[in-house]
Amino acid sequence: MTQIIYGSPSGRSLFARALAPCKLMLTALCLPALLAGCDAKPEAELTPATTSVEIYQLPGKRTKIQQPLEELAAKAKQYGDDRQNLKLAYHTPEVRPLYAKIHHLLAGQHYTEALPLLKDLAEQGFADAACDLFIFFDPYEPGPPEMEDATIAAYWLSQALDSGYVHAQSIAALLHYHGDNPEFPLDWGKSAEWFFIAAEQGDPHAQSFLSRRYKHGEGVEVNPLEAYKWQRLALDRIKVSHIGIGENGVAIAEFFLNSVVEEFELTPEQIKEAEQLAANWEESHPWAYQSRDELAYYSWEAPEDYPPPQGYAPLQDNPPRQDNPPSEDSPRQ
View 1 (cartoon, one colour):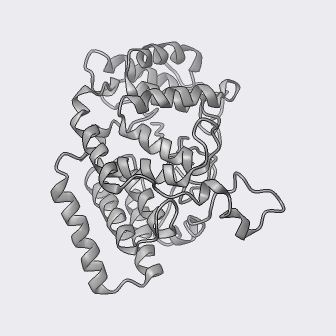
View 2 (tube, rainbow, N blue to C red):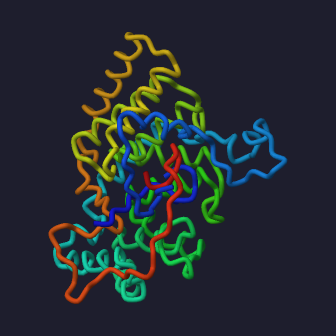
C-alpha cells in the first residue's frame, strides 16, 4: 500500500513530507549515519555567494514567536473544543467509501479521475480532502508535475486551516519554515506558532518539530528542557499509536531525543525535570489527540478496510517522483 505522511514538502529539506511515497529501510546500525544531516538548515534562499553567517541574517529566520504561549495554548484548546464541528471525510460513514476510492485512485496515479471527486468533497467542507488537494497541487508534493500550482495549493491549505484541522496547521508551520510558497512566506516565528498550536493538540509531528525548534533556537529561544519535553511527548505518542510514522518512526524519534540529551549534556536531574514537564502536560491535556485514527493521518494511503474500486489497477507507465533523503526538517517524515 502506498503510504504518504504529511509534514512538509518532499523537496524541502524538513516535513520532505511533506508528502511523497517513501519507505525507508533503516537499521539500528545505519540510522545515526542516515540522520547525520538532519540538523542541516534549508537552502531554499541560498546563492553561491551566501555565507553561513548570512544564512541566519535573512529576516524571516530572525523572527520569534510574537504571541504569548498562554494565548497560543488557549487557541489550541479552542480548536480542541471545536473538534466536533470538524468535517473529515475519513470519519464520515456515508462519505468514507468514496474517500477510500479516491485514495486508491491517487495511489494508482489515476489523477484525472480522482481530482473532480476530491474537489467536490473539499468544496463540501471536508478538511482532509482540502489537504489532499494541497498535496495534489503543491510543487514539492507527489502530485502530477504538469498540474503544479503553488497558489492553488495554498488556497486549499488555507481552507483546511480555516476549518481548524490540526494537520493543516502542521503543514502551514513547515511552509513558513521553508518559505518557498508565496502565500506562506519565510517566517520562523510564525512557523513556531503553528507548530506550538498543533503540538498542544497532540500532533506528534508538530511536537517533534517544535522540539527541534527549541533545540536550535529557531522561532523560539533555545530551551533544552522544552526540547526534551516535546520530543518525549512525540516519542510516547508514536510508540502507542504509530501516528503517521512509517516503519522507523520510533527509532527516529528516539534518535532525536538522544540528540537533545547529548548536545546539551543534560544531567540526570535535568532529564528528570523534563520528564516531569512531559508528564504534567499529558495530565493537563486529556482532550488532546491520542491516535492516528483521530488525526486521520492517512494522506494518499487508502483505508485498509476498503478494497480498490472495481476495475482499478495502478498505472505502470507513470513512475512516482523520487524523494530526497529524509532530513530533520523535510516535509513528510
